[in-house]
Length: 328
Image (cartoon, rainbow, N blue to C red; front, side):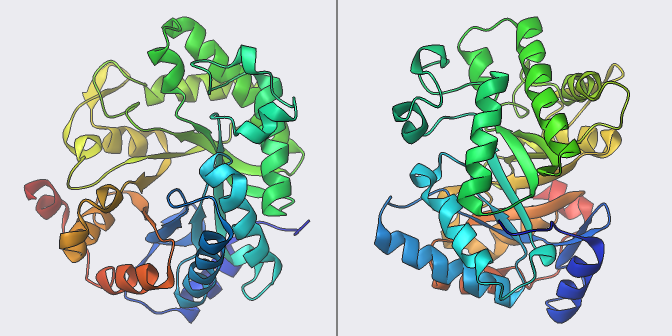
């Protein structure tokens, strides 16, 4: 297992080594994190795709991208394993890289091996049961070969609400899952955690960040909670996190972006180019999402080295002002 986790000194040294522009690196607390991150969601579950991802990740780490995002369910756990193989080569210090993964949707392998019971899954695919969260976390650590995961997301928890789970019960399930992650923090297996969602925070009557923080606070039982990150779609095609007042904080309606900043939560965008739909206007699409106030990283799926080169070139443009983002 690879020891360590992202640190302030190592990420700052990494940023200094890769001067890609005054605003290319963002601050997430004390960490210096690239405002363009590499996602590993799409493409086939085969050896050829593994090799392409390995080349892309290796190149990205050498070119200035130090935020890697994956999930246990991506490509049948193969994406996690590719990241683990690249990090194990040690070409970039472990402490210079922020690695995020997710659990919630269950890969078939864990069901087949009876590590997670199929009959307990919501909609046949999703779980928030504490024992299942723990099982997925341990499997992800093995896949990634990491002693410590920087950010562990509960993956699309809104799936439970969509399946008919009552709101009160839902947040109780979140609290129980967060208790597992609080224990993992104490054990040095996770630095921070949060939720990675699709529709959750972007729609009216969806997830409430304030209630998630309340659940994490209860899970921490008097200690400082570890709910520090959210991942959600933000793009020119899906700007709701910026433009819609879907959240309430102390009774005040506001956008997700404003709520996250008020509650001290870092956030990263998924679907930054709408899974390729905005690739025809790549420079504008990446520039806009990188410019969203408070955003740490715009995540873009990059399964090939050429994708990394194209996206880095697009990310060299200076950020827009807040008023320009809203005007877009």
